[in-house]
Length: 497
Image 1 (cartoon, one colour):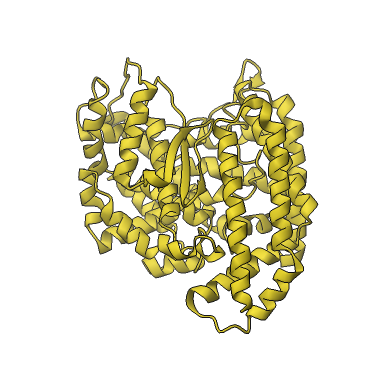
Image 2 (cartoon, helix red, strand yellow):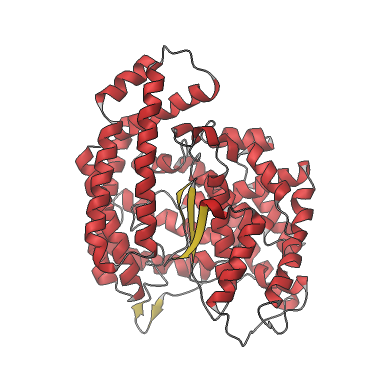
């Protein structure tokens, strides 16, 4: 059967991409600086080889012939995923793919170095090269699919997602947040304690706590590990999931929540359908669904009173934390709302505004309404509008905590950012339904037991891989497609009571 031959090809591609994924993690975590040029070229070569494999004319012939194979269920869905992968790949020449891989990897490597040095001047030309290739890719795909260029990029991160859908959802949530945040700030000013911990939070203690929490959430350490990187991420493959965090000895909150966030991603990867891991249908659905899995852990489950009651003794085993004495105190610490510069450290209410400003900027970059040189000024304007903050210090921009804080544009991830906030909305929707169907999803977390929540997520989402669209997954699990009202109801209840 042609389908069986296709499965062999895609299994080989999976194995090659396995090596590429681990090489990428190594580059971000421990590769010596001087190895970057060689690694980028090697990854460019690997991407060219895999691209030539999937775009080989034989694959196209087999896909056409496989339509006559008697397929159903998972195999029929797998064939559909294969066709999508093949069609998208054939739009881009292999040399373009190799060049894009090499340039983006070099740019991301530069970002790791130059962000620390607050050096936008050297970073800008590298980012301009990445953007030009992203625009070229967007234009090619847009012409083929009959989409706008930016929609073509969005579709690559979550099939079927469009600016029309994003604009409608963000257009509902943005004014809601802008009205809500001042009310919450006023309420917390009156009711919340302030904390000033005069102690050092050692990396060793933070790491041991992170590993302990990962174990309670359900992370399989026989098939993954925790490392350190400039920017937290989840990488590798389902059989070998690598997550990272970063540590600050002045505070513990960001590293712990970073670990929880990435563990949510890892739990999705580690619970994908085992029989189809090497096939397209066994891969994650898309980044909107992926982000829902990180945020259902970080924002829904692990900022609950149940989890703070579990976490507080673990913290007190390691640190004094003077003044942090009750579950309510810890909940106050984690629910504190404060407009800030850094997206990954932002609170639940202001975080979506960080995403919305990036979304607006990258839409303009892809449409050529804005250039890379315009980013710092646009960033400053949005920070003033959304947060009342300025990224200027001593007459110049603070790029490191401004427009250079994220690696996404450096690695060519235009179209990725919206999935964070859409994922947060999906997380609220999924968690509400999980609690409705099984009250143990929340109550057992007080004992560090995530089994009930994981069982519900495995059944309704993780085990489905890419066999359904994101809207089908949400509709089947919750009774409706993506609905921001769940998110707005959740934060109103959490922050206003």
